[in-house]
Length: 240
Image (cartoon, rainbow, N blue to C red; front, side, top):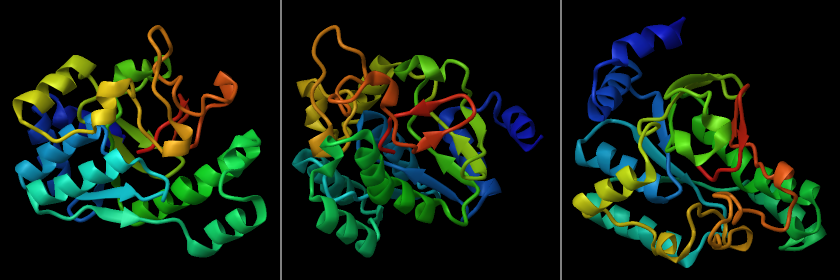
C-alpha cells in the first residue's frame, strides 16, 4: 500500500522533486549507493548540487580499479560533501584469503559468491541498516530482467523501499547529462567498460557482446549474480 501511495505522490514530479520528496518524508533514513559509474555519478550530482539530504555511500571492496579511486577522489573535491565507505569485515576477509588465497573467486562459482558476500553483500547490509529508502542507479534498459520493474519498489530481502531516479533514462540520456553538467566520470567507460566492478572480475565488452559479458566472464552466463539486487522479479549482477 505504501508503495502505491508513494507512486501517486511522486507522479508528475521531476527527478529532483522526487528525490526531495523522499528525502523529506524519510529524513535521515534514505541512502544512495554509488559505485562511481556513469549512472551513479549523474545521481550523485543531482543530490550534491541540489543539497538534497540523502546520505551517499560506497562499498570499498579493496579490489577497485585505479580509475574508480580517481573518480571517487575527484567527486569529493568537486562537491566537498562526504561519501561514506563501507569495508569488508576484517576477520571474514582475512579468513577467506588466508585459507583460499587472494584470487579464489576464479576457482569456482561458490568461491566467487563467497568473495562477493564478504566484500559487498555483508557491508551493504550494514550500510542499509536503519534506513527505509535505498536510492540506486538502476536503469530499465540495462537488462531484460528489469522490464517488469518500476522506479519505486519494495525490496523484500532488505525490507525497505528502493527508488531508481533515472530508471527510464537511456544510456544516451545519461551521457548527455554528464556532458552538459561537466560531471567527472570513469574513463574506463570510454574503453569498453559499460559496467565497472572489482578489477579482477571486470573486463571490457567486445562489439556485439551482451552488456554484462564483462562481469565474471569466466563463468556460465546463468550463474552471473552477486546478490546486491535481489527481488521477486530479478537477480542481477551489480556493484551498487
